[in-house]
Length: 387
Picture 1 (spheres, one colour):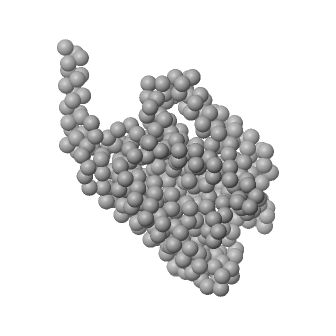
Picture 2: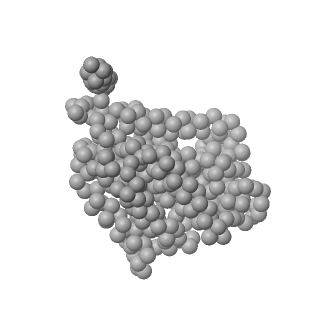
Picture 3: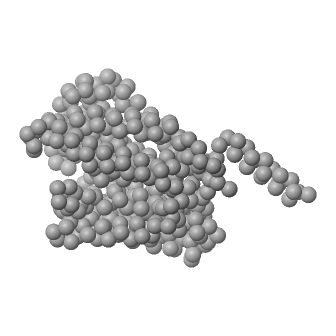
């Protein structure tokens, strides 16, 4: 039985707000040079992020935090259907936009939209709804495993046509986390893992630029002026920051040395300006957010709330880890943004909308008293069975 509504997890809210403020401060510095070159002022990217990302994102977060999270079960399939249409729309001439050889954006007049950021949330809501309905069939090969793999394959294929291997990785990880919590068999998870490794290797081999990125990951000094340029400049930025950094606004790499300084490379600029000690605070904030999210999932009043919470927090935590790890050469470059920090209105909007759902779930979580009652009920049931 669900708990009565109570106060939300304020620690979760505070952590997100801190990350949001840090993101705006760092973006104002990282984007100053490219903003002046493109628009004649230092704050165009910051203004865009404030209006399209923060303003609409906070509005979305407030709305989703006030809507009972169970409401989304009714429209999960419809929302995913709309998202699939958007994923296909990027290939329509005049609607889809191409940049750097990828078709990932839809033109909305003065603004653009990235459907892959939408599918991160809508796919989580759909999977949670679907898996909750199939609780008894989840462990079955025919009625659980094959349908799960099929729908995951459809979403993954549409994303790879763009192509966007980084986003596909985030979606697959969050989907598998949901599937695992829902009660999947270990051998089914092992099969997905094995097939995933083979698939990723095929995708890397199939695209020369991905193979080049993987080769540079193994040997960062290879081709420093070519395919290895971004990672070498990122490592230079991180190393230049030292323990305490050059100082806020004093990055050298943002002067057109480091590619994507406002996007997936923004962590390197941050490390250069703030240094290792202060960067630990950012990493700690993401770790704390992940812990609060998984605790929230553990105390969720029903399976749907548990699955949605696990999916959202896995998405945010894994994406943050991959972005940071790529900037220090622990994993190959993926091109995915750093949540709450990187420039991108669509990403920030839907990340904050997802946080709003987490906040709503936190208002129905089982309290310490409720958990104690559950333990007593389980002990009583166990005692009756022994009799």
